[in-house]
Image 1 (cartoon, rainbow, N blue to C red):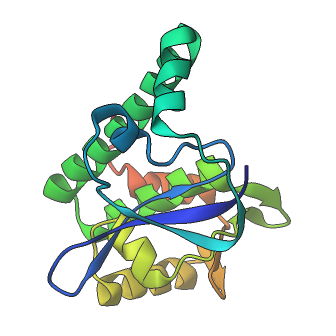
Image 2 (cartoon, rainbow, N blue to C red):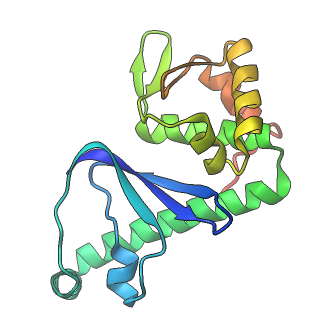
Length: 182
């Protein structure tokens, strides 16, 4: 209902992978509610978070009684699956710089707000978290973010990022000029 949360997974080798961000209006835990399997990720509140818990039985009954809600939930799950598929395709076919640029464009599009000099998103993400979203280690992400800052494409503050040249970032994200979909 208010705030935002990070979705992560423990990789079992001492590392944590950032899987996504959830904001106002997003559902969390719907996969377990639908298939009865244990949770597949950890959701961590980032600051103050207001939520509403819907017990599994009540959630499933709502979906049965309200087909429009079932279609909306299916659409949300489809959107997340497409996002994950794009990341997988990116990991196998593009260098870390392109992957990071794509993540930044998508974050700006989904969570950004216009402010003087660009599009800012105040998601309090570390360089390492941005890197894991792009499939890059912390050193690589830091190096690529520094390069983008030096070029004036982005500016960063403590866990905040502003896209200064969105068109240039899009060119870096899709160097062949084709914005792919999966």
